[in-house]
Length: 293
Ligand code: AMP
Image (cartoon, rainbow, N blue to C red):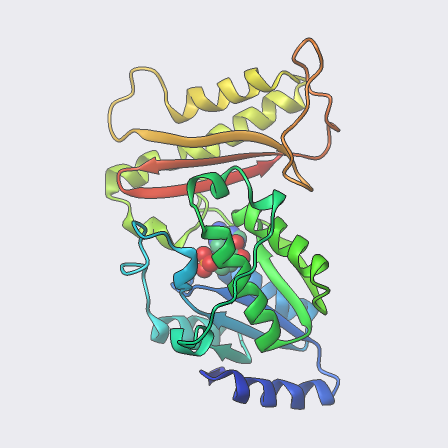
């Protein structure tokens, strides 16, 4: 069934207030469109848990840097609506930029520690844009269960933090990463990859898995875990497109704080709650991935 499409906050609110009055629970999946199986897995998780599912589609200008891909980011609302209809999505909210950022707006939301380092260090202003648009969506769509992908691990942790700090009446759920058959994490940006780049891209996921295997075999020297991952991302003597690592870091999963080591360089952080995160450039495309160890 085709979803009801809203472009304005006021009409969306009126509709959802009516559903809440009938005791319907609301599940929300915020996206930037160009939907793939990763997004659809969030829609299914929302369907399983909530009576009504709202998918938001908005390419948020404030989270893109001046030299990033805002203008060329893939947009195809017709196709997205078709995919969502097949998942029985109830409501789609696809506002224009002017609806979310009217000309007079001047407010931004900044979350501190959790947005520092990793993507935050390499994409200045990115997480301020993310926090701002997610706060606006929380207010536009209202109370509900919000589903985010762990693909964007730092974003998910930041949204959890902000929802708690600002007392938003929402529940934030983090869902598992959906991967292609060869281990590449699904992303709307994968369409940018040439055939050769696409063939090299699964090295990121493979590197994280190899480091996790080493960790699970008892290795607790972060330098050796990272070296293992690096050797797969950038194999010696490899020909073809190069994956240029932007960051490759081991962090505490809940807070994203850097891990701690003892005098011998061995992990002193809890052994069950670490995450290995990577960002790399392949040609002109930036890819991110992560794995909880
Ligand atoms: P985006 O449209 O890229 O902003 O993503 C919208 C939501 O889908 C975010 O919560 C992402 O983390 C999530 N998502 C994107 N790709 C995947 C994936 N491969 N697996 C799981 N969730 C994903």
